[in-house]
Picture: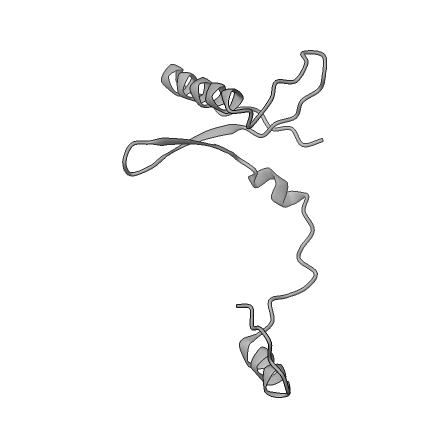
Length: 95
């Protein structure tokens, strides 16, 4: 299991995090789990926008150690255009 200790926070930050969590609970975006269930969460981080608004985010950087590298590379443009030049009918080109 992935475990990471919470970041140190000041009281104002804690109040803002609780406010955001309560808003998410009120709109049913998240739900409470029972006290006897094991819940592993990522540390909460508040991001401040230029206009002063706060956004609640999770710090998922620790997951990078556990994820697999992509199996398929992004195709190179000359290779993709070469394949496209060989096509007889083109219906759609997703970029």
